[in-house]
Image 1: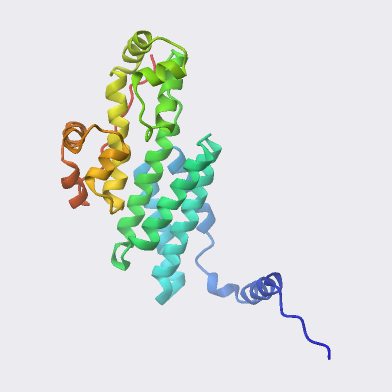
Image 2: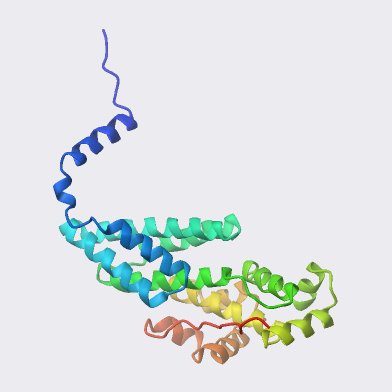
Length: 261
């Protein structure tokens, strides 16, 4: 007895595409979608945070008008797609593959498990903040001393390691005194200060988007104890880790290196 083979996934996709292709009228109003998305990615890549937030809102409006009752589901799906696009962009800027994957996983975790239906616009702004912050780390510093540029990028990539000035000096085959001197001369802050600044910046995402205790986050970023973490966090952000965690209204602390010299 001959049996009819079950349709393959490719057969099913092809059939669904033909059905959708015959009903293009349902996509009216989406003609500018990819144009706006291209603009959005450009704005994120060039760290134009506020413009990027407006572009993402425009995309959400298009998706909402198209999706009806399934709007929240469709917006969630788009956030995940956009996170994957940005992970690829990170990889293209020489971010280590593991960090690009971790970035994507963190975004998906936020969208799937920490986004209430009423918070989808707040999550949009949070994702843009996250994208811009991570990409800003990849912006090549423009100091005239190339070792200082390399040190900045090295710290950005290895911020969760227990780095010391001695470790970094050894990695670049120079003395600790010479490294400390040239870093402060060009970056305007000490190397220890920059390590703390980056650890504070990175710890903010775990405070706001994870269930880890403050003590665990302190250990993760290799502060000697929670009290010291709290003191350093408040020094740069103006609030304690607990205050930052408890209020979504407190903006992320961002440090800007001086222009190269």
